[in-house]
Length: 285
Picture 1 (spheres, one colour):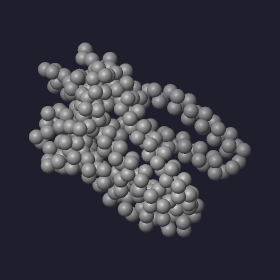
Picture 2 (cartoon, helix red, strand yellow):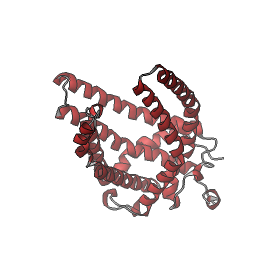
Picture 3 (spheres, rainbow, N blue to C red):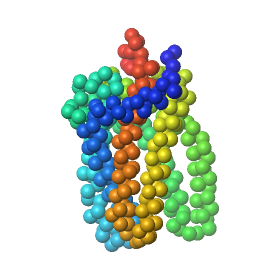
Picture 4 (spheres, rainbow, N blue to C red):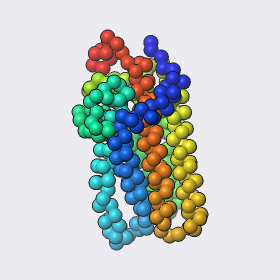
């Protein structure tokens, strides 16, 4: 059984940052712009959600949501283009990338399909989660004693479900984590087919992802501190100033595109370490 070295995976992740930017700088810059635009738009809406207490107030803000479909298309398209270019560069398919990693080819469609398949698999859990919190919110709005007791029961049940489901979800996510690398390498949608490959390697993959995740958390923490410092220097206001919107969004977006090559490099290393040889048709059939 093939084994993953956590230290080698971590090294491959951070070594991939420079090579990833050289291979896909155009796609990553486009993703940076798309991510920054989306975060800036989301930050500008952070204050009005609490004011949607009447149909008139909701109608007044509907115009601000009209740009959401276009923003999502730009964000998803740029992100998938970057993912495709980075995975191809890490899996010896760089010659299939477009200029500066800008392309939309069969690989990007396969990545989108693989993500969609896993999203469908998780849909029942998402719907259950939404129903539970919807019941809790309804109970909170009613204000009655019976409703409060019902809400307490629902939240207690939710806590138990979280305690049971969270470790299971982490385990399943780690076991399926190289699915995008397999999808690009095998030139077909691969999701649950990687389950057999990652057997016996949970802790190594988890440890490597944890270290890379710490880097992402550190950057997010810096962004939060900067946002707090900007707000403190300018004073709390009803509406955020341009600096309060732009600076944190820019830091977060830059962190995303800097760490994306590391994440792809890590998953590519894991997949290469476990990639089947002559039995590849059996594993991914």
